[in-house]
Image (cartoon, rainbow, N blue to C red; front, side, top):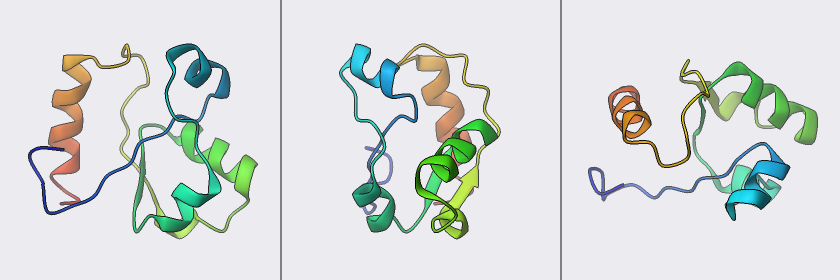
Length: 89
């Protein structure tokens, strides 16, 4: 993110079908293992990570409490994320 150049970021989705349709990254174990912090929008995203990979990443996961109702790349979502991420950065 251009607002926090001192940090490294990665992004991935938890819905394989949607990731394939959009041409975006689907979550993988390498990403999770490399992350210091894993931020998800909703509890359902955390649950999907747990379903796929077990509980080994639970201590890294924080739920932002953002409803997953926004289109990919939505400006409204970007603004909400910027506000929510400030607490972690």
